[in-house]
Image (cartoon, rainbow, N blue to C red; front, side, top):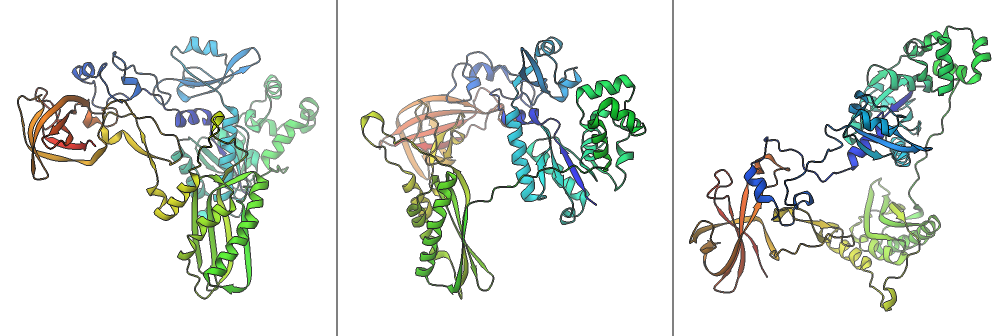
Length: 544
């Protein structure tokens, strides 16, 4: 007996927006109202902080799509703009898909509207179907704009039964931020109806119980068009059970064959095949040896032959390698693997061969290798690219090959570039970026070339007055006398990240010692504002 499931994502379009969109407005403080003194101090004098805090006025709170504001998507239908999807709050306020946008704005003031993206939703469902075909069941396919078909026949026992498998699928969707419902039945029509009109998010229909399970559902659960539903409503047929009890001949003459076909499909009387997605296999080459090989020279020769076969396949598919895996099967059953990554998509066989040859010495062939597989586990489209340099006639050097060689020798995590991040706190204002990727420009404010992580305590600090530049201090057991200094530069805590930073203050000073050394010190807290810090001093950076 076939067991088919329907996975429904009722708020797919809204959930995708909430997951991907990041509005620049900060959330409200969890500790209640923010101190007006801190708000006034922040106005107009912020350093490289969040964009929303650079104006002289207090921060303006924008309605977030994942907050209390009603969120809808809209698209153009002829000469009208109608709603394509609405969140739960918007539906509770009387909005529904198909309603004119102008009417919705009148009914719900302050409505948050985003452009509908049906193509993006369909592409996301295709990706989810490919994931399901690899991880859950080999037969999976999108079922319209809001769900998937899943054939669980013969695979549910691998996950501990249908119930545990469906719970695992729902948990996966929750981790992605999507509300999901799933139903399992003997037919696709019944599973579709139960997933969208059932009372629980997980429904397992027993074999042969489809007719009883879907009998109280409206006719819309049979995936019928609006014309057929309107005609059935005029006839007085409101549920599937009432439709199934009526004679078939009059229904055939009045509604045609579609109504009875959908009913028979839901009840399991007529099969309903679907075309499952077939995940694309990564480009790969397999070499089998008549005799096991074990010497580095033989392995390198086999690797070169595999590379010569792989490159034409990549070229015909218009792909470039980002990650390449070499897997060798030993005669004792063990598998030896080596992998390389590239900073940019490439199908330069000589370059890839040099990178992989550096990994051969890590292989342990033992008594010999029987098979060798070369798999491009991660690929990207690669077409013709213009030569950089422009009208000047000077070709810009391509650093991708150099980055790849350094990454192979030193490790991928040790090759990176630094990028600025919008944050007031110096330790949060920089992050690692891809060696060839785009990096945010550095702010104009002077910052030390070397930051200490974490900041180190400074002892025996002497200053003329609480807000003055320190005149003497001791750091790492050595006393320093200050001959010049500048400050303070006040930095407030990022209260929208952590509640305990709502009142935090740092005062930074740039000082120069008698020996010409320049340091970046800060004091935690303000002596005139209790609770802003413990008034301890720390060394945070050293200028070049």
